[in-house]
Image (cartoon, rainbow, N blue to C red; front, top):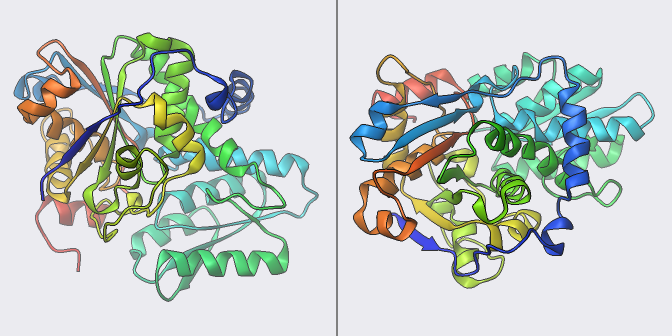
Amino acid sequence: MNARLKVNPRFSESEYGARQQAVMSDADYQAAERAILGWPEYAATPLIDRPDLAREFRIGSLRIKYEGARFAVQSFKALGPPYAAQRLAERARPPIGFAAATSGNHGRAVAWAAQRLGAGCRIYMNETVSAGRARAIESFGATVIRVPGTYDDALARCHGDSDKDGSYVISDIAQTAYPSVPAHTMHGYAMLGQELVDAADDATHVFVGAGIGALAGAVVARLWQRLGAERPRVVVVEPLTADAVYQSAARGKLSRTDGSLVTVMDGLSVGTASHLAWEILDGGAFAFLAIPDAPAVTAMKLAHRGPDSLVIGETGIAGLAGALVAVSDPDMRRELGLNGKSRIVAIACEGPTDLDVFHRLINGRSLA
């Protein structure tokens, strides 16, 4: 399977408008920033310069925004769900409990948030998720509940149990009793966008992975708010088999993917993107790129080599994998305006969710 690129015909250089403000205003962002800056462990994650890759792929610079250094969670997820959980905790009466369904880092972030807030926590995982990911979640004091079937089965069980005992479900699906969780999650993620404004305002291109699209939407929103028409060109990267945002761009409306959802980038295995994220990405992203699995594994190996070695998980690698696919293809270079002076930032949105899985992938061993 070959990668597919769609330059956004609705890309806007106009001001961040009312449609986008309804998802995240500057006041929404400022509220999230005040809260997150108050967390004792907060620090901006590093930008790792990789001149070896820049030379090899004939671009001006390549920097990796490494979210493997984000709190104890080692993922961008530590910004969004914990902020949403904190907002809920501020209005709730104790005792309070949280619940989530996950295949990895979302559950780890919710468990970490619950531990910080002194709340109970149940995390639901379908039976095929690796034992290493479950252990990482349990290390934050959460109870992991295994559910036969798929992620959707785990999510259904999570909602059913929470309806009975009043636990708050932290997910990208709005709940009638507390509908603001998906928006607050995006507001928390926008901290990453602000860190790019502060540390990489010279970037010409930013490559970011998308599952449901919340991180990509939040990054685009904050860059658009702060830099306007001067913002870097953001390229949203997805698996070919889970290309819901790409399909939405191609069809001009929020759409489901027709793909199988089977991908090594399993944290991006999503059938439909967030409608909140789409409100931002529809006019704010420059292009959408769907890639096969092989470049993801290759990018994991390239990131891990040499003195500046980085351990990037199979989902977190999507941004870097997309960047390397694009700079390796003459037509994509032309369509995206990439050349020898381009300054790329690739967002590596997580470290390893399971080190055993990481090593098996980079060493060419089966995950079965």
